[in-house]
Image (cartoon, rainbow, N blue to C red; front, side, top):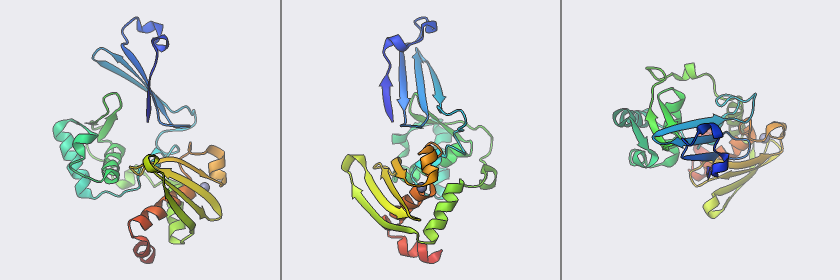
Length: 239
Ligand SMILES: [Zn+2]
């Protein structure tokens, strides 16, 4: 995420001198963006998707940009207990509980998705904030995104071909593959988050990453993670 501090000329006149600082938080092309106004002890955060027909949960499929890790129930509970006790924690404070950043991220995504925590952008902390008094179950959360379901089928059919990975140093890992005849490229950062991708398919041509990654991009990423973790044979045989 890029953070820009806006010059004072951008601070609205109606703020009447109460706004100390305005920040613009950019996630990337086609992604949501946020404005944070700091007014003494108060923080005002406004998030905008930039797409009138795009919601942030289902159609934008933002959770598919996060590392594709599956945390254990025990790990989710540990993070929930700590946040419940402390009320809020930074990512640094949560890291000793689960060392693997991908699994920690998956725990936090799960807790946010089930209405138990929020991420406070202005302070960059995770807060215990129960929207509902009990965590939503998988059934109540609704089915997985259709492109994610389709990508699992692609993996089962072993339709990811010519998979190659090239280490880009600080930028992360650049993957390329041909999936169901479509040429894909995926850039993952060092934490496994999807930073950039492209594909030849009609889904990607229609909206790039604005509708979430397509099945080919997701399958490329999963195939790479399976190979890296040495799970290729086991997973493909079991399925
Ligand atoms: Zn595609």
